[in-house]
Image (cartoon, rainbow, N blue to C red; front, side, top):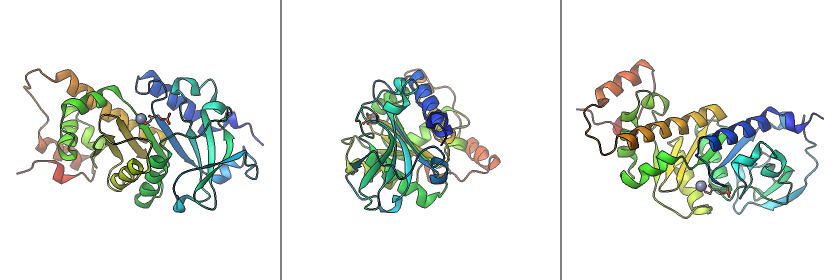
Length: 272
Ligand code: 13P
Ligand code: ZN
């Protein structure tokens, strides 16, 4: 059996949480990540017959039965993951009943997975239907994205359009746009269901005045999505209140989308 601390997926969680903390996106215990793992790969590091304990997940995740995820722990600080992965992370398998998580490794201090597990697992289910290669769901509180929520209309078309205008590459990176939910109580099945519904058409979902969710095939893709939104939101906040002399026009965005051959939300542009 190989040492789990050398597993690339543990390494990836350590590096990504450290990066997100360094960028100021995930204060205190803010943010959570879940990564769907390959069972055969995990069996090189863990005895899959050994369940440490079981934890109820609070809903039925039928389509994820038997699947294994590495997930950040609730109340755990991203800044501490790198130093102590076994306390701050856990590896769980969705049990045969679809309603229980079997802990295979981690949460060493008796802890449990993120309180946002409903939003994570429901989003995995929604994205896997659209993209069978989806592996990552990431939640974060990026500063400028959050600031923008207070001064910009929380409307999917308007918010996406403003973000697309802020950096030339935005429409290429997230041509599917950004879904938006109003402020809702977090940590509930309700916000999980609402997020998953949005994930049927978007890889990015803003939680009004709370943060953002991203989904993707790899950690890089998912991180890059949130990073690009955050950069655009930063430009927006830096220019807010100054006279707007220039902008990227809708016709220019069409040229970009066509050159990079991306299928963009045409209804999010104002084309004549
Ligand atoms: P957890 O500590 O339960 O992961 O919650 C953090 C968070 O960002 C809630 O939305
Ligand atoms: Zn949060």
